[in-house]
Length: 176
Image (cartoon, rainbow, N blue to C red; front, top):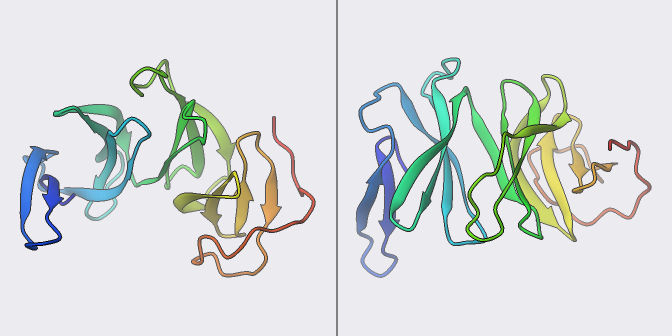
């Protein structure tokens, strides 16, 4: 993905082919985060080049069609999916809230509106990953989350290291 669309990169030849446009007519935005979903679709977020408020969005490319899923995103981040494919997670870094979006089991399209899953205030940033059945979110205090909302302190203080191991510690916070 780049500032005009989504591309397929051929590893053998090093060439790219654009498969769809995403905000090609908007000169102030660029792609920021993307992730393949369990149905073979691709979610891609955009943001303002200078983090302009509400300039970005989150889209889904699926079966040759691109649709905008969420508008007015400042900095799209942390797009990932529950291990059982029941929902997607994403955040607008500027808000510090990780959102949970229910998904149709048949095709992965969003159902209803997203809900706040975790609210870190202004500390949330970075991409989400899964390790040992838990969903990790990079935050300033470097914690991890699992689908029920348990948080664990990370085994070290480097928030740039997304997954450094599987901590076997007691949860420090519970959120329903």
